Length: 298
Image (cartoon, rainbow, N blue to C red):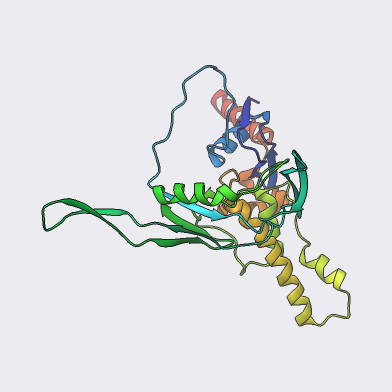
């Protein structure tokens, strides 16, 4: 067995599905793992999990500037605290004051952008400029919007000027998001499948109740329609939590094939002949080699 060292260069836990089991690496952690597992992490979690540095003081390369940037509204996060501590000037000195978290409630972010100035030549031949009409730029709650790089950077700087900076950190109202992927959950998924996806993306997240727990807590007095409504509300909470992982580029999103493998679990993987353990493959190879040698001897 060949071991390789891998490194998680993000601030969140990264996971992959390996033969039906979830393997994770903590934020900024280095791990010594089997060579095949290391390769799977580096391929599936590209730019998130990399081979640990064997050389130091090397020169890094920088990607060229993006033409378009997706922006995500970050207000309304269920995981945000209800109250935060802000620094205020009171009684002739700076003090930490506990206030309601202004980004806990979902809000449509809207900023007014002045129009550009367009130059033109007047009748008398003098070069003049005309102010073009401005427009409102909006990023609705729990949504992503694509802008050109100049507009996106202006909007981020403008809207986050009022983002609260508490003692525990900054709560940005908007961030540069990843673009939507081809395989993402939506409200058409059942609750348990959404929770499984959330667990895969962020193993450390405090997940809502599954459908069985919702029905058990509701008791027998609820009608079937009322139970479905309770399950839908729990699904809405799960999708809200998941939204903030979908837009955050630090979290890796699984493809359809990998997620289906994760749903089946390790037992299904063990039944798959292509997913046998390496030692069993080695035994088979040794038996085949011995048979070949016996045939050659005859």
